[in-house]
Length: 267
Ligand SMILES: Nc1ncnc2c1ncn2[C@@H]1O[C@H](COP(=O)(O)OP(=O)(O)OP(=O)(O)O)[C@@H](O)[C@H]1O
Ligand SMILES: [Mg+2]
Picture 1: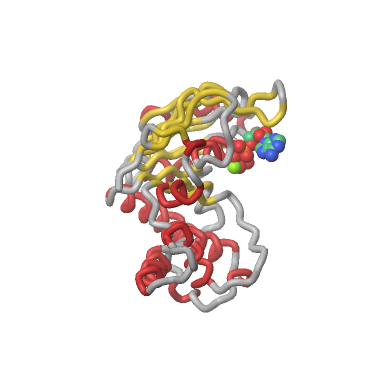
Picture 2: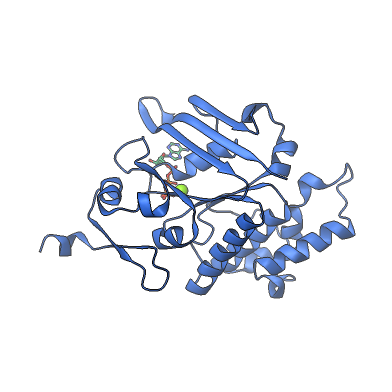
């Protein structure tokens, strides 16, 4: 199932006169792995919520396969687009397997009963996110990184065409970070459209085909394109309001980004 989500010229404010986003445009489509990056508070989660239909833009349009997002029903949208929020607070006790099965919800019939196929999908997604060993644990007792992997398994179980993921690796160890980015890249190669918000510019440079860079100082995006085009020293330094160095990753030969503390920069 292919899909194409387009945000065109989007603007958004939480408070009158204080725009968080302005003239932001992004395409999320099947077989593409897109990153949204930028400093804290630059509007990444806001843009992802707009893309997922959780917030309506003040101006601009958001369409899924040509249809305005606001006109698509919740269940239909959930079958095509999965959204992983930046943080998840469990409010009731479920096992890991039950949590992953929640992802099947948009596909269940009126009685909400899981079929053997739903269970097979959940098992496969547990394995893909390296959570099979956790399947009988209570979700609430998991570490932050374990929870993050289980939530990823849960939205994979939704079997959407497009995945919108807000910092899916922020709590993961270095091994799981790279494994999850590699999994997301493979999903894009298999035809999923993947959009990830991340603070890890080096992982974005290594794995994403396109990136959108938001700014700390302006609601308008600073740059958009391939990581090689966007991750230039002047562009990143403008977005982050602080000098940022770019060299070449010694193994991957992708841009390798580093920042120094202000105290060192003034020496
Ligand atoms: N519900 C809200 N009400 C008012 N302001 C909000 C709300 N949510 C976010 N903001 C503000 O909007 C701006 C953008 O927030 P957003 O969460 O999109 O940033 P972000 O780029 O995802 O940041 P981070 O990297 O810290 O997650 C911030 O200044 C934030 O304080
Ligand atoms: Mg955020």
